[in-house]
Image 1 (cartoon, one colour):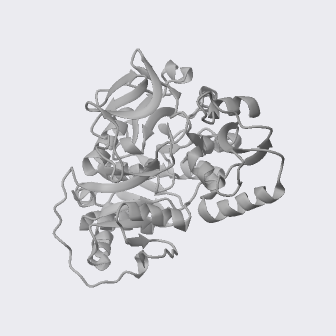
Image 2 (cartoon, rainbow, N blue to C red):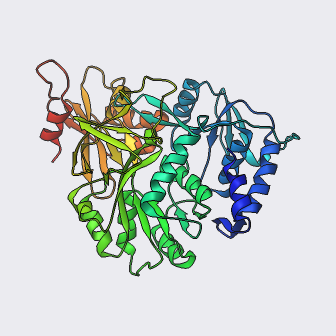
Image 3 (cartoon, rainbow, N blue to C red):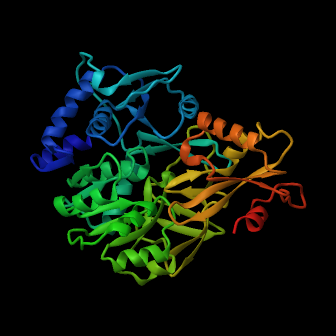
Length: 452
C-alpha cells in the first residue's frame, strides 16, 4: 500500500506539497522519503510519532508507511505523564519526533538525526493493515486507542471526495494539527487524489486569508474557532475557494450563515476519530445546513438513529486496542443522541458530558478525579459553559466557602498533569453541590443552577 509511490508514478512533476518556500513534486517527495525510510533503519512494528505541522512530519509519515510501521499519533499538547500513559496502553516504547522531546522510559529518536545504513525493506501491508492509531476518550476520560486501517483512510477520502469534488487540480490548505484526524486526513486526501498540499505550521487568520489568495487554494478545513477568527478579519472575496470543511466541534447555524454571507463555501459535517474524519456532510447550497443538520446520508454510509446515532461504513474503525468497542449488529454506536429526518442527520447532544473547546475534547470526570485528591472532604463537579470564542469551556464547581489556598494548589497541580486546553477556565466555590435522589452528583442540575 505505497500510496505515495503510486502518486509519483501517476502525477510525477505535479506539485505535491508547498511548505513555506519549499516546493516538492510528487517524484521529489517520493525519492526523498525513499531515502528517509532507509535511514530510519529497523524499527518495531509500532512506534509513537510526536509531530509538528512541518515538512519533516510529512516526510516521516510517508517514510514510516514505506516501512510498513504502525504509527501511534501523539497529541503534542499533552503533558509528558499523559503521553507516557497512552504509549504504555498500546505497548509502545519507541517514539520518533520532529521536535525536541524527552520522555522517561521511552526510546526517543529525532527524525532528522536518524542516519542508519539500511536497505529498503520489502513491505506487505494490505488494506486491513493498521496505518494509524489515534487516541480519543470515553465519557470517563480514559483514553481509547482507535485503530485506523488503510481501508478506513481510503474510504474516508472517497467519502470526502464524493462530497467536495476535489481532484488533481485542487489545492488543499492544511492548518489543522497533524496529530488530529482532521489534519492527518488532509495528507491522505491529497496524495490519493494527486492534489497539492499547502501546509501551515500553525493557524493565523490573516496569513490564512493571504495564502488562500496567493496560492489559489481551493479547499481547506476549519474548526469553528478558526472560522470565527477568519470572519473577524475577512475583507476580501476568496474567489478560488470551492469548499471549507467544518468539523472538530459543533458549528452553529448562526456562524454558518455568517460565513455563507461572506462568500465562504462551507460544508458542515459530522465525524470522529472512530470514523477516520468526517463520515457525512452537507453543502452550503443546501438550505438544511442552516437548520442544524450536520450531514446527509450518502450511498457510502448507512445510518440509524435509535436513541443514539449508529453508523456503518468502510471508514469506521473495527476496534480499540485497549477497550471494548460498541457495535449494535454491524453498526457502530457513536454515543451521540441524534435524529434523522428525510435523510438529514441532526445531533441533539454530543455525548452528554463531553465539552468541545476549540475543537479539543475535554472530559469532566478526568478533571474531577484530579481535583478530588486536593480538596479534602469537599465535593466537586465540572460543568460546561458556552463561550463565544471556544464554543464551550469547562468550569469547576467546589462546594463550601472560597479558599484561595485550595484554588492555587489545584491550579498548580493542573500545570503538572493536565494539558492546558483541559484546564477549567473558572473555579467557583458554591453553597452546595446538587445530588440526585440516588446519591450521584447531577451535572445537569448543577449546570442549570450555577451557570447562566
